[in-house]
Image (cartoon, rainbow, N blue to C red; front, side, top):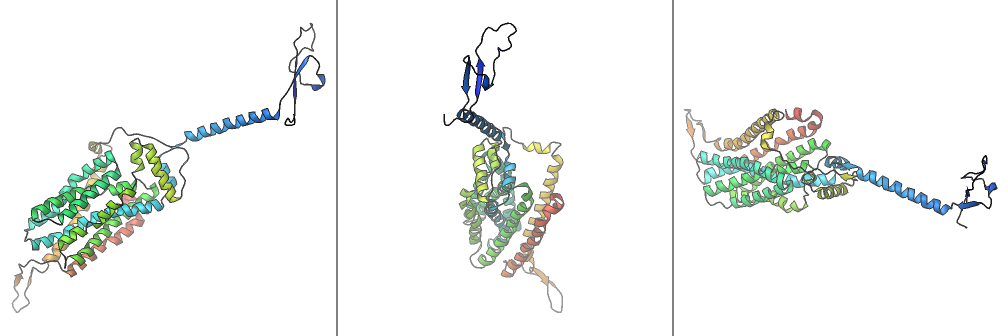
Length: 408
């Protein structure tokens, strides 16, 4: 009885056959002053009230948890909540290595052609074929690596194509004859066709507001790779030759392959593949590295059963955009690689013909094959460094002017 507080008596009248007109027969009377022998008294204790309150509290908590569990979020919602942080800086460096390696394997074409033209006495069309076969390999490899990445994952596709480039890039350094070099460099080009998957993987870890700046940041790694290749050629070519240059140019790709174990799979790909738990683990890891908290609720699961097709790009909705982008990329590649490859050709042909300075002006031509000199590599370095001012301007203008105006 000591634990009972605020006792209250609830009295009930025992039922009697009331007399007609008797108004005293009632049930539920609570007037304590009118308790008699014919009444039953019950006392409600605080213990019972407390148990009732706890039961109500548990029901309330359960209902709150039910509401919380019903809250959902998407991968984009999670990336927006996590923001740009330490994890994104790390993945910028790792995927940037792939872009550096890609640039070096492409830049080497402008150095390798003039060297082999003189060393192996190759005619012009064979020198041009060394470059052409790389682009042919890229054209064949790009859609194939895209299919691999869509089916097996961005990380898987990128890792495989980088291992491919590393293997055939090193093998090409041991090419005994022109035919072997042509085949092996074609295989390198096939692998380079999958290198843009590094940008695809990178972009799927970025919040929306950071994508413009960060994609241009990855483009800066291309310019860095081109500069590294020219510096490497300036150091290697006068002493060790083109075979060492081909072998050492694969170093960034090799470093990337060593760091592949750290790269996570794209959480967006995992969700679309029905692996929601794996995507959630990846997002939780990113949030922990960035020191942010995940959104409340559960990750929305959406398994994609139907994949897109190439012919979908030519539906009325996308046809104009597809053709415009193809034209832009064609003109961009035609102009950029045309300038890069033509630069060394101009260096090599610069002194082949001239005018005699004697009393009688006569044209003269020197049929001796001219190797690129250290001064030529220095000039090539300056032309390569010219990419950085444009990159810096676009890097900060892309978020202010917009994607379309910056591209224009």
